[in-house]
Length: 139
Image (spheres, helix red, strand yellow):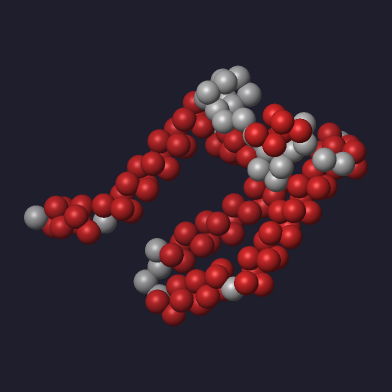
């Protein structure tokens, strides 16, 4: 009886968990460098320039195989953002409502959104420079 009640109340959470578990399995067993069914960046396909998200799939695959430096070379912004994203997930599942409200206010704050967009934009520009490419290849 308790299991049925738990399943009924947590359907959305369970569905999200199962989705991410399947996603993790796909990225663990299939290398985005070797399989063509993974999404390609439309910006890079059309213009040849990389966006801030280019390399995330390869970085995720490398992280799942504990190849941290390789993951960092594919997309440093993604690797650096993971601890912050995990912190947000843990806070979301915490039992402290004041903490949740505080974090929600911080994330919805216009200044926070503006700063994140600036970081992504600057990273996108930097990622297409020779300086960045030289730096990444020498790591």
